[in-house]
Length: 137
Figure 1 (cartoon, one colour):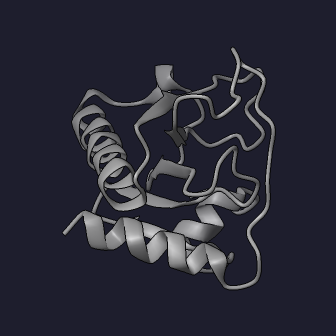
Figure 2: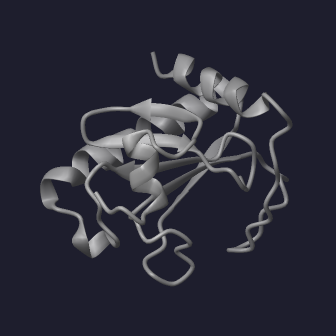
């Protein structure tokens, strides 16, 4: 854990987040500035910065979580698919390895790597998180 890392704070429960997944090796939560509502960030509990830092034994738990969250986003939120991405240093707004799982629908307007951002209305984030959590059961 890093004392000055926002994502480590979320993992430790000292920083606020809308949690979607809480497992032994991986935590998932809604992005506070989602590309589309239901946009989840998956982070390893261990403080790592880039994919190159990810130990082999954490690859399966992290990618399995991405697969399951992606399936939950499509089945629970009705998305037609997902966009799964990871930045390494450049465009990495928090220096803690994280995987974006973004709901996609044909014609949603996302082009290339232009990531417009949106906001949740009061109470709306928890509704999205609960839907995704329920779909993973």
